[in-house]
Image (cartoon, rainbow, N blue to C red; front, side, top):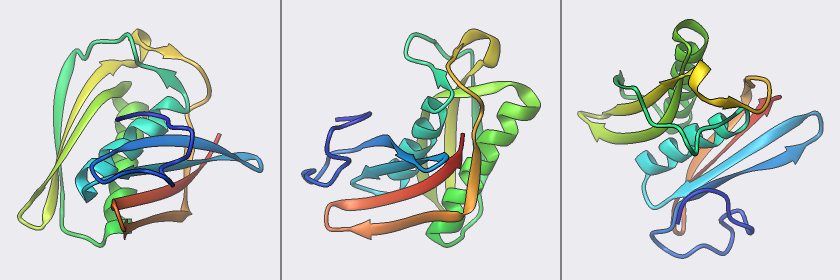
Length: 150
């Protein structure tokens, strides 16, 4: 199970994953969940992308690898989202698929990307509210929440 679900992961079963955007006064709150921390991070990236682009019919044109050093869970989420937004701003790359794996205490991330010109832009690129970002283990795996300024 991936993508948006109607219950926001609240009634999920072990092994399920997904993400959703929830209206927040003046902003959007992104929520993501998965069985493991790495998949939850990947879902968070896809949720942020969905705030401004439809990548459902886009094939990646390149694969980039990112290595993030060991950090607390919240800092890993912040660093990954920062990297994604940096690549969007500087290189015009939009992730259409994401895989993350733990490696030597850090995180290895594979970003399958397409050019911004190749995706359907549906809104403004959001800015992440770094002060309202959280990632935590839960009874079914991992969850995270991020407020983005749309």
